[in-house]
Length: 156
Image 1 (cartoon, rainbow, N blue to C red):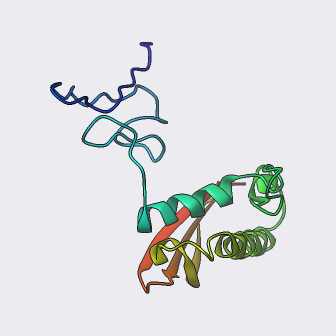
Image 2 (image 1 turned 180 degrees about the vertical axis):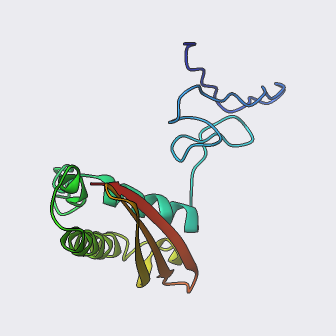
């Protein structure tokens, strides 16, 4: 395994270096985590892409993990390995998503970028392609009126 190579912004008079991609699933062009921009610096998300990231982040963060904002997060992790009926798990996932999105709505209420604020949860659909897997697809509408499709997979 090779070392992870990071570069900083190109200095004036320097030639840009070729895009460096990582060897793990958490870094590089095809991941949803660390991304490089055209200057080989870390990309900063805004608008709809930031909202998608914010939704995933709050759903994947354990409730109470942030000591400065104890209501941030969800309890979706508690469903992993659970042997309850699918209907109950689906109901629990729905409740966790709605609660987390309300928290995110509260946290972003003063954000000047209206495409980073949730106005409405339009749809919430569940698929169970395997007995131990639940796929959730959701559509939210931003305060600016933009429709955003996102989702997650929960292994139960």
